[in-house]
Structures are given as structure tokens and as C-alpha cells.
Length: 481
Image (cartoon, rainbow, N blue to C red; front, side, top):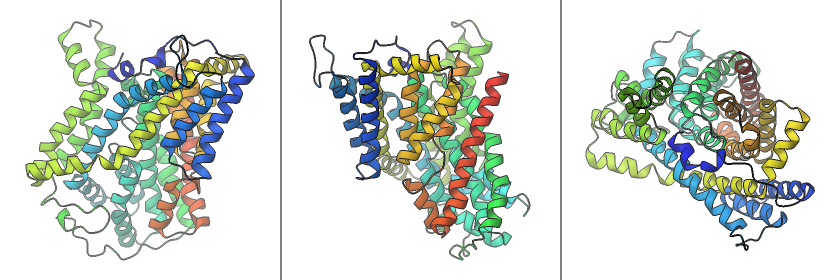
């Protein structure tokens, strides 16, 4: 059992008997989810408050006491238990990931990756190079941060290659979005792994297997078509850019480092947490003896929290000191990384509270029995649930939290591989058809200078292609592994 799973023990706990008749629990669930959707989409209430109120609604309608009954159970204790467990596990991972991403950005390491890969690409291979750049930058960074950092490069590449902004921009967006939906340590996949009790290393490996062909289909291949449908010339904003010294960059992605760390050192830093977690998963398979020194070492350094902690410490030298940042600047960078993700941690933690209320009322048990009786593909059901919540709320994170919560009873007794595939199916559904209730929709629209209709024909359709092709490759993996 991983440290993350240990911090979220209720994902694998025995199923709870329903506390009320089936119709009442279904009504409670629908009212709770409906309230969350309405508060977020209509009244623009912050998702943290929306999830909290939704959880209280589910428990109250299901007939539970808000505070505590004679058996010591209640809606509020359930919510706080789930909130705390999620904040302790997933919240720590998000914080460490944000620290590393900020170091990567401020040191110029991200720019080094972009410049090195794009400089070696030919006009024909540029969309493929941009997809690779998006995927690499997307490994440690949240989608919005990666987009802001990449926009100057997308502008420059588009102007120098004399191609539509969409032709080179869509592949980069596909790389960013696929990493966000499929690959830990992003909040969505990590949360789903914790809730469903999946093996993180195995999910990471399978997630990369799914992400690569998905990026190919939704990135360079779809980008070629989208570039014909919508021809947007890039602005001349960054034509004065000098890639040799990232400290000269202006606008989105600007840094204060004196020089960028080398490409090799930067890539080592980016891939270090991935290598540690995959190494643990591989050694666990190859070495049966749990007392063997090799097994114990990899079990230690490959735990998600420790892997990211080690990476942040190493990056302080390989990215921070190597770029000329002094200890005060490194300290400032790490401090500045945390305020931006405070809201994300609260949302994810409130989602953990919402999950626990559903578990403790027995709603999950009821839905699990219904799904098994209906003989529906678990992977398809996971995808559909995530799609519906994504369309309703516009949030990939909320879609992942809610869908994975409802899937908890269905993964009981499943193999590690099948559970990881359920996580990936949820991730695929969580990125389906971004539209006007998604902040990312407006971010892409403004940066690319498109109309609403053009954004639907490019960005929204790309997200749909990514979601459907991701599900397809998850189903293919499910048939062969």
C-alpha cells in the first residue's frame, strides 16, 4: 500500500450499508450534485463552498444528523474526516508539485526545454515538437501555468514557420491537457488514485502509455485539420525575443534567472520524480522479498510524497543554483509557489469531504449494486460519469472527484491494473468538451485571439477528441493487459 493510499484509507474500506431507502439516497445524491452544479455555474460560488454545501445536503436529505448521533456518526464528522485525509495526502503532493514547477519556471529550465526542442525541429516536424514540449512542460505544471509559459513560444514558432497559430498551438495544448488528465502528480489523477486505492506507479506507467497515442491523435493530427478550419496569424509581440538568455524574456513566462540550467540537467530534474515512482513499481514486481535492500530503498524513495520532496530538494541545486539564483531568491520562489495553489487544495480537500459523506451514507454501495446488476462496463461508466460532471461544472478536477467517488464500490475486488484503468477512464472523461463554463475555454480564446465560435471549432473539439481517443486507448489496454 502506498503512502498516499494509507492517508486515504477509506478508499479501500468495507462497503457501508445504506442508511436510508434507495429512493431517498438517490434523491440525496442528485440534490447534492445538482446543488453543486447550480452554485458553480449559475451563482458563481467558489467550488470549495459549493462542495461543502453539497456534502451537507446529501447527508441531511439521507436522514443523517448534521453533527453527531448516538453512534457518533454525523454529516459534519464524515465531511471533516474526508477533508482532512485528502488534505494530508493529495494536498501535500500538490504543494510539492507547485514548488517544483515554480523553480522550473523561474530558473529558465522550462524555457531551456522549449528552446532546445523547437530549435531542432523542421517546419514539417514543428507540430510534433510542440506536442512534445507541451507534454514535457505538462508533466510537472498545472495546465494554466504551462499555457501562460508556452504562449510566447507558440507565437514565435507560428510567425517563423509562417503557419497558423492553431497548427502549432493545438499540439502544445493537447500535450498539456493530456498530462493534466492522465498523469500523476496532477491533482485529478492523484485524487482518483487515492479514492480508488490504485497503485500510483502502475497508474503512472499506464497513464503514459495512454497519453502518448492520445496526444498524437488530438495534437499534431487534429491540429493539422484545425489549422485549416481556423487560420489565425500570430502577433508580433515577441519577435525581439532572445532565447540565449531567459532573463531577457518579457510577458508571460518571464523569469528572473541570470542563465538557464543546461538541457540535460533540466530534463533530469523533470523526470526524476517520474523515474523514482516508476522505479518503485518496477522493483515491486521484480523483487518479491520485501526485506531485500533494493526493495526497501525503492519503496522509500518511490513513495509519491518522498519522491516529490526529493525532487524539490534536488531542483534547488540543479535548477536554482545552476541558474544563478542565490538562496534568498530560491526561498522566495518556493514561498511564491504556494498562494496560487491554496484554492486548488481547498477544492480537492472539500471533494474528499463530499466523497466521505457519500461513502458513509451508503450511496456508493447502492450505486455499485445497481451498476453490477445492469452489467455496464465499469470503464465506460467511469468515463460517462466524468463527462456529465465536466459538462455541467466545467471543472476537470470536480469531474474527477465526483466520478471517482461514485466508482469506489465498483472497484472493490478489482486487480491493480483494472483499478488503474478506471482512474484513467475518469481522467479521459474529465477533459471532455471544454466550453463556456470552463475558465480554460476563455483563457485559450483570449490568448489565441479567437471568437467564441472559433474556440469551439479548435480548443473545444480538441478536448473532445482527446477525451474520446483517451477512452479508446484505455479500452484497448483493458483488452490486452
